[in-house]
Amino acid sequence: MSAAALIAKNVAAMPAALHAVSPILVSTLGWIGQSCFSARVLVQWLASERAGEPVAPRIFWSLSAVGAAFLTAYAVFRGEAVMIPGYLVTLCVYLRNLHLTQPQVAKSRTSSLAPLAAIGLLLSLGPYLLGALDHDARTAPNLAWQAVALAGQGLWIGRFLMQWRHAEGSGRSEFPPSFWWMSLGGSTLLAAYGLHRDDPVFVCGFLISWVVPLRNLVLHYRRATHWSR
Image 1 (spheres, helix red, strand yellow):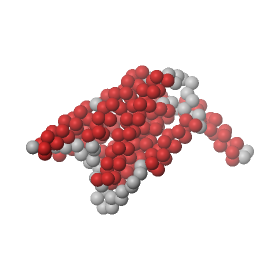
Image 2 (cartoon, one colour):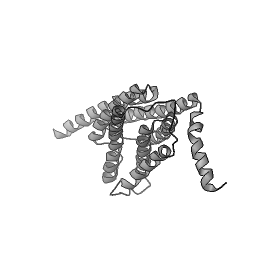
Image 3 (cartoon, one colour):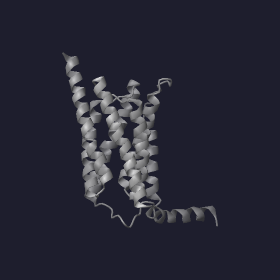
Image 4 (spheres, helix red, strand yellow):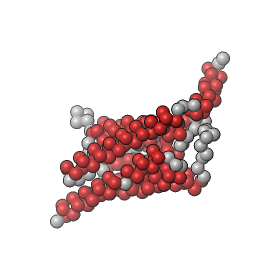
């Protein structure tokens, strides 16, 4: 059998292989990912309360990267193609921020985020183009809900790309206030999508994402008011 024929055979078998994965294992992947995201929220919140302003300790980015990896796998096995780009693109941002938080590393700056963002999007489209997300058991959402999810993902991905550009410019891993406003908008839309899809992993994660942005906005504007006096 030729190499091309072997590859085609393996690709054709991917949907059945994914379909055969234990639902318990898939759910475990999702909850591990959301546990990492919930832990990062708590860590960032406590660090910000101590500092009196929004800050991002190094462990925040480590937990984010691990959580994104698990949730990417979860989204693939669940057949949620619309959710995969967000996790993969933001994973690139998490890894870059981890690099920026290394004190011994020179903080190199880039003028464009396009190359890494393009890589993330290309990777996210790979399973879909290969037919790996063709699950008969889960009906695809209608166009209206796809639009809701894409709008939510646009805000969810965009906030980290914006944060990335801000970090590259300042040489520090920190959050501008627009990051938190975009977090509120994106989490609201994606929580609604999760409810529609009857997916407790997504619903839990995006509802929790409401708490910390609100508190960080309070800390930011309180500090801004203090310095304006």
